[in-house]
Image (cartoon, rainbow, N blue to C red; front, side, top):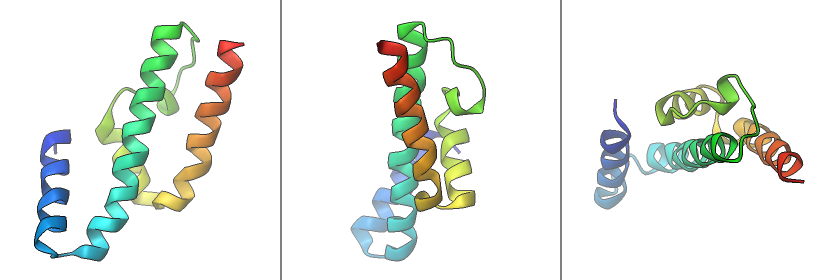
Length: 90
């Protein structure tokens, strides 16, 4: 499923009130995946040289992983990316 279709689906669910719990839970993973892709782009653009799935540029990979573990469980991964990028920029 593409980024656009995932986001469109979540927007429709939110606007209609259908699946409110699902939309809210997935919404945390949308935010997580968006931030993961931004961090991956910063890694690339800043020449940090980090590799691995943590640094994938794929929204779908980050979103799928987050949905499999839950947004709360994915939060430490986001913090680790931020820590690594901060250290790279020093």
